Length: 374
Image 1 (cartoon, rainbow, N blue to C red):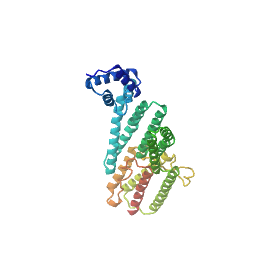
Image 2 (tube, rainbow, N blue to C red; image 1 turned 180 degrees about the horizontal axis):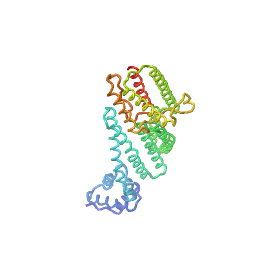
Image 3 (cartoon, one colour; image 1 turned 90 degrees about the vertical axis):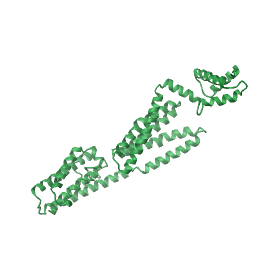
């Protein structure tokens, strides 16, 4: 058994302190542990310094200070490891859900939307917040905590923006733009200025900053500008007005044409036509606040956007029209005169307002054409 001298004990204690261990109690615990290892494993004529340098490396991965950081986390943050485990598990689950959801989406398998939404929600409200909390606790300087917080906030905003975009919910573009503004105008300057001053992190900071700028630019290429969005809404509203004009012309022509439909079919036609009109008026009022739109819609800024129909239209409202159409189709002997109910407002989730208005107008057009054909 090797006998450690007082001089060697002082050497070990000084080295432990020099390596970043400041807690006296932890210094003594490490000293006792290392001394025991040396006494039990080093030969009497062995090289103390060489053996010590080899033995001390078994206590850390990067540097010895890790032990003190872990000890502080255990003493101050009793739930640190529980939170860390939840963070890792939630991150893994969200990654798997998103990967499988995207695969299902490309393969047109059912459940894709639910998987993607669940993955984004877990990432936004469990993984990213816990990542921020844990990283903030590990950082000692306030600027590092601010950088971590801004990065987490930008990531959460972007994640929710993508969710809103997938679901066709309002404010999707706003969330994405807010995320990019936080990243480029707040996170990036603070991160760059703090990292560029340190020679050890200078290169990584520069590379990371370039990647952030390039990534933000690529995301912006996929987002319509405010002017582009307005122009899109103007075109959509204009197309709706043209469809309504065509429908009115069709109605006038039909009223001048002799109708040979049975009373029962004629009544069914009228019910479907008026029910479609009611639904269009309802959707239009929910979207714009007006029951009708005039040709001066652009000057009044009354525009049809890309809001999801499901935000306004209850399932039973569409179900009532669908039942009327199915009864109507059952009475029609000619298959070409039946009103299609597939790939329309009845079986498309998250259909946009403009698409729904167009579907309803097409149903009315078919009804009018059938009256003239008979």
